[in-house]
Every structure is written in C-alpha cells, then in structure tokens.
Image (cartoon, rainbow, N blue to C red; front, side):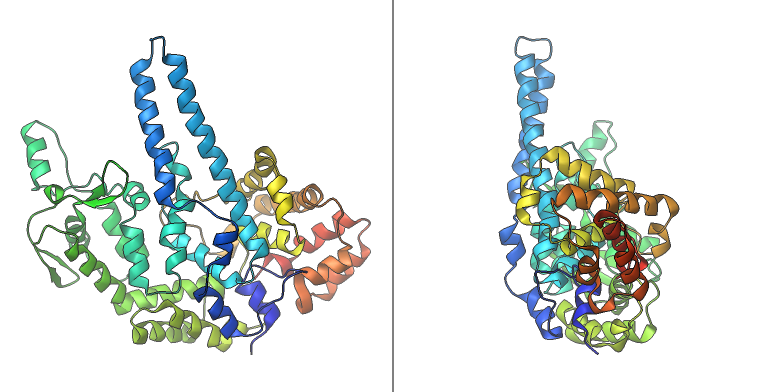
Amino acid sequence: MFDPTLAEIRFGTGLSPSLKAPRDVSQMLAGIQGRDVMADRFPIEPYDTYRHRIRDYAVAQRAYRKGRGTEQEEQLKNARKKITRASRTAYAEFFRNAFLRRIHSETGFRERLAFFWQDHFTARGKSVIAKRATGPYVEEVIRPNIAGRFEDMLIAAVTHPVMLTYLDQAQSMGPNSKVAKRAEKRGRQRGLNENLAREVMELHTLGVSAGYSQADVRELAELFTGMSLNKSLLFTFKPEMSEPGAETVMGRLYSDEASFEPIKAALRDLARHPVTARHLAQKLARHFVSDNPEPDLVAAMEAAYVESGGQLVEVYTAMLAHPESWQASSAKVKKPFDFMATSLRALDVGGTTLARSRERDLRNILYFPMQIMGQPWQAPNGPDGWPEEGNHWITPQFMAARLQWALAAPRALRRTLPDPRTFAHAALGDRLPKDVRFAAEAAENRWEGIALVLTSPAFQRF
C-alpha cells in the first residue's frame, strides 16, 4: 500500500532529484517527532524576539507624532523608517526560509503539517510591523506542537498575542468587570468582544455545525475576558477585565475564579469533545487526501483522536495507515505556495541561489506571483484560512498566472536548466504520465519543456 513517490508528493514537499523519498510510514512519523532540522538550518525569529520590533516601532511612532513641527521631526521620522526597513528585511528572510525549508526538507510531512495547522489557527497582526509577525507566531505556537496533544496547540494558539490582537480579544472585557464599570462612570463604553470565542468554537474546535448556541458563544466570550497583553506585548491575565461569576459552556459550568485556570479547563474540554475529533479528522483528510474524503477514512482518524485523548501523532498514523490515503488518483489541487515550492524542489534550486537573491528579486519571482495566483503570503481573507476546494484555485486567471510563472521563474533561478525529459522524471517519478513525457520530449527548448511539466495536471495535483 505504501508508495514512496506518492508519500513525497501527497504528504510531503514534492520529489527532489537530490533527496530521497521516505521509505515507509514509520520514517514519515519519526520525521515529525525528531529534531526540527529545517527550523535550525533556515531560522525564523520566534515571536519573543520579533515583538521587540513591534514595540520599538510603536515607541518611535509616538515620538514622531509628538515631535512633528519641531527640529527633531526629520530625525524621528528616519528612526521610524529604520525600524520599518529592518522589519521588512526580516520578513523577506522569513519568506525566503519558508521556501528553503520546503526545498531542502527530508521530513516533508512536518513542513506540510506545520502549514496545515498554521492555516487552521490563522492569525495576523494588525499594525504596520505586527502584520509581519505570522512567521514568528508559527515558530512559537505551531511547529513545537504538531506531534503533541491538540489541546496544547489550541491553548498556545488561543492565548498567543498575535491571535489575541487578530481577533480583538486583548481589549475585550466583561460588561460588569471593574474596568468596564470605571469606564461607564466616565461616560465610555467598554465591553465584550465575541470574535475569539466564536472562532474557537466554529473554526478551531467543534466546527460550524456542532449544535452549540449563541448563548454558548457568549458565555465562552465572558470566560475569555481578562486575557490580554502587557506592555511588553506578552500574554497576561488581567482580573480587573474579567466578567464576574461562573460561566456555562456546552453544558459545563466553569469556576467563577477570576484567573486563567477556568479558561484552560474550557479549552481542554473543547479540545477533547468528540465533535472536535470529527471536525479535525475531516479537515485533515480534506487537506491531504480529497476535497470529499471517504467517511471510512474520517471515521478511522476520528476514532484515533478519541481513543488517544487528542494525540495528533495517532491521528496522522490512522490517516497514513488507511488504504484510501494511498489511492493512485490525485484528487487535491496544489495551492500556489505548494505549487511554487514543489517546483523549486524539483528544479533543485540551491539554498545559495535564494540566499543571493535580493529582496526585490524575491518579491518579483516569488512574492508577487503568489498574490496573482490568489494566495498572498500569510494573508488569507479571514480567520477561516485558505479554501481547500480545488475549483477555487483552478480558474482561467489563476492558471494563466501559474503558466506565466512556470515560463519565467526557472530561467530566473537556474543558470542552466535541466533537460525537460530528465526534469519530468525528477518531478513526477514513476507517476509520470505518457502525455507529459511526450510533451517534455517534444518541447522546442528547455524552458518551454519545463513549463509544460510544471503546468501539467499531473504536477498541479497532490
């Protein structure tokens, strides 16, 4: 049942002419539990480092506003610009390293899972510098937790400063809290925000059709009050913002203690709920196997989740052990980032090539084309992340963008292009269809032959 070529294409980061495909499922699973080699080799700042950039910019911005019209205005403006430039340079490095991890990984399943969970827990900063903090958020929240219990990843994501800011939780307070009462006396309206509570139930745990009520959302939102940020832009719990009294969510009563403990208890209960097991199993199967996965596959993954108490490795094991996961037909369309990264991996684009690429070249060769293909880097339209349905990505406009990129990027990134016949086999292995082989052999030149392989249905799908 196991197929190394299919394993690397469907569950990994694509075939490479210089890296071996996994030999079995156990090697794939070992790859997500061992040392995170790619994170070490191509580092991305954790949020605990990046937050200083956000804070420094806010300080510089306040100083500039205060100093406008004074002799120091230009100096203060330049200080602000310096922080912005440094942040943009760091962001370009995060972007570059995300591709390099895909190109050079020998544990492709880890990279794919990290991207899946990043999308599941979509979060993005709102200010000028914070908008670039998604990579640092992923380094802290997602990558360390992909082989652990789901509840630990859930708590890490929901309480992270980037998520608290993204879904407006940091300013949410109980209508009867001390801070709200003081604000009311001063004629100000400060109150509850339900965004995070709603998305935790609708997207992160139970799913939209789980049968919870608006009252459940409201009670969870009240329970969440107090979760905020301190001046260092780190998570803190502020009792004075917490709604007094006990809360009931999905039939469970949580303590009236104004602390973080009842919140953690509620998140663990939501993570362990059997409906969450079904929601996550279906979502993982839809991401890796099919837009409409077989119920038997989902049921096997769901059972593994419930029986293990949400141990994610057990869920992955159930997915990889199921015959449906190894069906020969490719049902999933690659999203733009997956398409571009697997292309560069098949082309064996070296780390030194991207490392030498100027920031402007990275934007022109990779960043802007991703936008044109419909997937601006780390900027989905909402907290529900990127669409999984193949028909969203295969449109005339988006396919034209893929073709244009396939014709231009290889020549820009490789001084000498491989023979299209050799490349076709490197990119698709023993899954190379006869018509793609024929097209590669009949191409008038190398760059057109490579583009024909990259834009073929066989390469566009997992």
